[in-house]
Image (cartoon, rainbow, N blue to C red; front, side, top):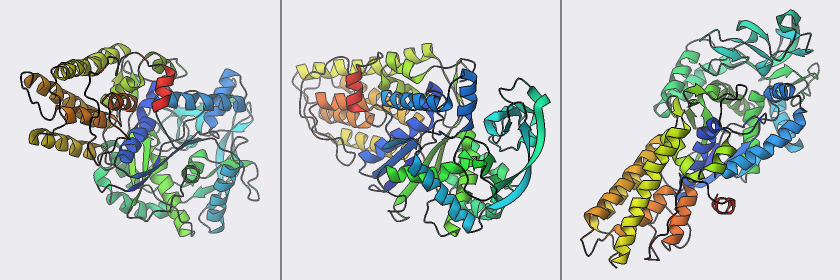
Length: 531
């Protein structure tokens, strides 16, 4: 992969019906942050953007359950989400909240598609709850998935990733309704759809050309979806929560948030500092991080929307990479807000060092299959594999400093080792082969090497390479553990920002203080200054 490339990095907008729990943090937000940090280390131009999914129906159902006003719930959770991201040192150039400018941008996008004839209007039958006085879609309806038979809400099954229509759900019924199925009616409404099947051949070719860097579960899902005709994608729903439709006869409808999301991403990238088309196609990569459960929307619906927009004369990008993750389990069960089976991100990060948590989340990341988190296992693992390991390195290094034998010379052997590790990190942080787990494992192996060589050269009066090896330790830590890397670089006297292009040079040959990496949380001021 060539350095000095340009990247647009996007993660799905969290729904502001609650704060972020650890399952959220382990996924696209953390992955996007680590990827962006590494690419910036390499000198690449990176624009990263995030927003909240304010128009999502789950906001309404959560507010009903909590007996709160939806707008007040959004405002509170928007602030909480931003604060939790900061505590985790997860950085995006912008973390936006929809406003009038955003609404106008999204509306103009769909008005262009509507005028170009890209959207079709149909009369469709939908469920209506007379007790709740609303049409049922997404979070308003539940049942069993007709593909995998797991429990699901409408529109998408989180377990298998297949889209659904409420009429295909088994034992479909309304959510948060005292009337249950007794209040269900079938009504006919007008709605706009994107005829995705007309783009199937182009979508299939698009993914065949990039299948070598698609993760296995996504590849399987795409194979399943593309072997049959693709259903029309709903662009509108009859609802009073969301962005209103301006077209005649659809005034009581709003845009489907999963349709809204694609132009929304383009808007927030623009707000983050650069439009999505400023770089030429051979230098710009649009990297989409996402949870596997939302794969259909991002890989089928959004790619089809992008193709429709391009056909309508809009200059918009199609994501070049889709980096998925599976569910992160807590004590071998899925995180669940409604059941109280979760660990809130802010509570964990108030107790434990954010860098240590980040490193554990990387090492146990559910990138290709579900993995498990346990607090007891986490604390023991961090203490043994990170804190104690670095403390041993620090002790050995300080002993050599006391002997007056640490130099800035790089031996041919250490030079070769460092270059080998650099090449491996470049591979695992590439959008084609991105792997947080391999990155964390590689960093553990590097610490093992440094420790072994410090022990091995204990009696050597000229251990050339130990100084540069410690400088490389700070550099290699930077994407995963930015605060630790910054503190270590400062203690080593490394001037200026860390850069992948040139190995940093130690400016201070002095003992390293304890506490550069701990299990316990750092002071808020220390975390904020380096996030």
